[in-house]
Image (cartoon, rainbow, N blue to C red):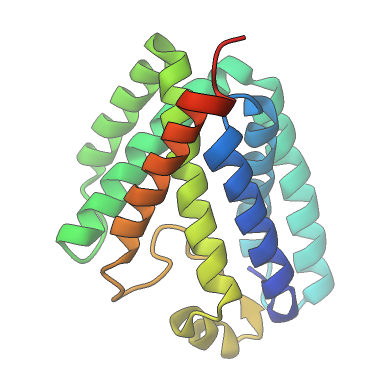
Length: 200
């Protein structure tokens, strides 16, 4: 969570980082790992601080972001496996939320995360391209909805004057989001395979 006044700048950074990952993720994979490490680290660290202490929330977000970025940057091969595992977990979460309400079974998440990690190590280039394209597409959608003032997120934030990022459910009730995600992810995959992700 971040102070509500930081919502628009954070949303713009999500859109820009998502676009970089979606359309040039393979070419700039280490940078993309750093960006996602920064985002996840900031989200995790800032969520551990009470919503009334703005300075502590921002400081925790910065410190957590730096730690997350360093972890993913220096753990390149582990990062590849984590990207595959994260993609598998994301597919489980999004697919389950589209079919049913609530969280998917832990076994389903674990199996898809394990398959994603194994696939990422065996087919590194293609898995990196697909994972960064679809992760970037999702990040673009989350950031764009936040920048546009998604009402659900705004209502949740209004009560505590903080902006809470919901990366797995950016727009509850909007059935078009998974279709937009798939379409944008496929475009990003095509761009990377055809232009930015070509072997040198």
